Length: 118
Length: 111
Image (cartoon, rainbow over all chains, first blue to last red; front, side, top):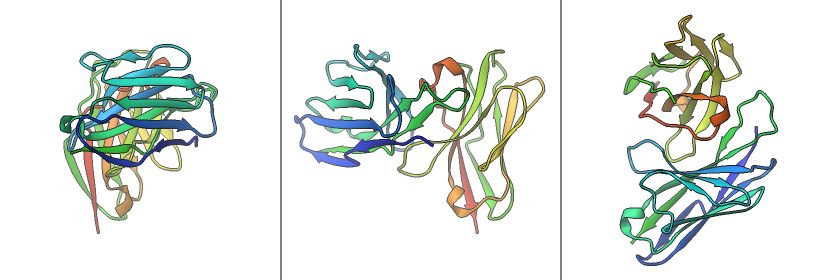
């Protein structure tokens, strides 16, 4: 199946700093990528939809100025957590949509990035 | 997307079949049933999906009732590595990617 990678796999930062997380589709082009957040013992929550070449669409309650999303190419989307605080500590997961695979499942998830803000 | 209901947790003996149920009584005619699983501290993994016919692949089988209001994911010979949270999601195919994850079922396979 298709592969989606994330970098870094985990990051620890100080409160007030910004952290960038990369999501790459390795063997397909993804015009659309999705960012999820998962707190401990909870399910995944969709944060935003990242569209190549245009502005991201954010879910209700997600601050677009705090979670900056850039989808500059068909294989890369980045999520920047600006001025991170301890409450932003979470597991961030991206998924990419492969629209070229016909009737097969087209959503592939990355391995996730664990963020710890001290 | 239609709402789904799954049991919170289930146990299964290693080597036996694991049958995970999902209720989706408000499913629309153009909505598919998708199953994903998430092993601890990893991203979700696609398992299988279907519209109305039963489906089988190398990982599992999906049985959808005739009225499509419920489905069952079957892992024919569960192994310890199948221990994970299993999510049943109902969505229109065009929304691929914009999945609404419920709480899922935590399957524990025991030796």
